[in-house]
Each structure stands twice: as C-alpha cells, then as structure tokens.
Length: 295
Image 1 (cartoon, rainbow, N blue to C red):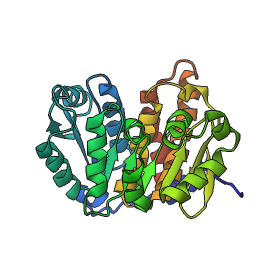
Image 2 (tube, rainbow, N blue to C red):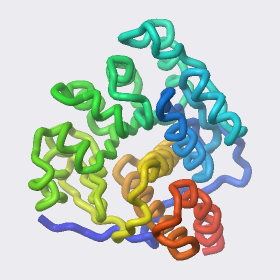
Image 3 (cartoon, rainbow, N blue to C red):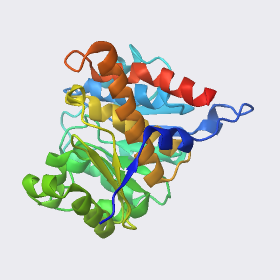
Image 4 (cartoon, rainbow, N blue to C red):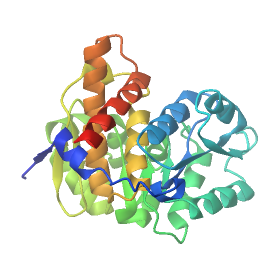
C-alpha cells in the first residue's frame, strides 16, 4: 500500500484560521472525560495541551480529587464534577446524563486519558457512542482498553471517532500479536480503520494514521524522549483540540501527530531526550504556533 509522509509543514498549513472578531465560543468547546485517583496527571496534561492548541473552552469531567489536581495547575479549565469510583461498578445514571448534557454543548469529546480500565469507563464510552449527536470523539488509553472483546461502541461511533492506541493497546483491541503489528503497522492500521469505520492513530517510534477510506499517513520521527508516561495524553489533547476547532478527523489526527512530534523534537534539543518530560512538549507549543502565525 502507498504511505504518504505528513510533515510539520503540512500541519501548519492545516491549522484552522483564527477569526480575530471571534469569541471563545468561536474556537470550539472540548469535553474531556479523563483522570482517576491513580492517574490525575493524565487529565492535567490532556486539558493543558488542548488549551495551548487554541480551543476556546475545555471542560474536564472527573471526580473531585482529579479536578482539584487540575485546577491547581490549569485555572483556565472549567469542570464537571463526577462521583468517586468507590461503590459503583458503572457510573450512576445521573452522572451519565450530566456528561451527555455537557457533550451536547461541546464541539468534540475526548475520553480515556487516565480513566482506568473498569466498568465505569465502559459505561461512559457506551453512553457517548449511543448519544444522538454527530460530535467527533477521540478515544485514548483506557477508553480503548475497556473495549477489549467487544468494539461495538466504536463501530457505532464510526467515522466520527479517532482512536489513539500504542501497539500494546492496539493488540488488545484487535487480538493481533504485537510482532505482527510492528511488522506492517500501516497496513494493519488501515485494515482496522476500514472495518471499524474510524480513524486510527497507531503510535510507535513512528506513528501511522489511517482513515476508513484506505488513506495511510506516516508522521514524525523516532525520539526516545517521548517514551515516557504522559506523552500520549499530550497527543490526545492536541488532536482533540483540533477536532473541537472543526478540523475533519483524519486531518486533525495527522496534524496533531506532526505538531506533537515537532514539539517533542524541540524539547529534546533544548533539554535532552533523557531529561525532557511530557509537560515540556506542551511548553514548546507556543513557539510552534507563533511561527505558524507569522507565516
């Protein structure tokens, strides 16, 4: 199959135009259903990345302890408090209703970063997939792990879904051995994208993005500095932000990957691959967008 390279230059050309007369509502609203007691930082990284990429409003739906962690670092975020995990095998119906109501006021949904692989996560994904809306939805991390053995919610989302698995998560989701995925990543990603009807962002040392229509793109270059927990949460926030601002799923996914790779390369150059952190990727975003605006 033919695989095209999608570069950082391609990404800058794809960025949505900023309306100088627009207000915050003109630049999209992202609902992020992320974070748990164990993985609070995942929510922080995702929403911070989304805000840095230009989304007008980012609303985090999470338990209070996650919200407290996020509010201490990202005061620009808004919040939808959810019940704590104790005592619930699934999220209560009133909490699901609150999430769906918030989704109805949003232009995109991000779900999964740090949620935990549990029945609560599955119930959220099923509810979002069953909602009568055409919102684009990005599923990352535990949102994908919760679909192991039954991907019907993903199939219901279809072309409005973007999934961002690393090879381990993709193996669990598809049942395909990791060795086979690594041998032909673009082909396997494209086949799954076609069968499930969604956009696939298959993360490895090189990221491949595949569309339901058979298009396959290669993004980024190897950077061991990205091999740290939290880098994927940053990528999810970047792509979700572009979705919320109106980019089509395939273009948002490819542009987000290219921007993430460029920011990672700049962080490595400034701090070293060994010492850089996922939060340093976010710190490089202002310089990237400043250059894009000047061009």
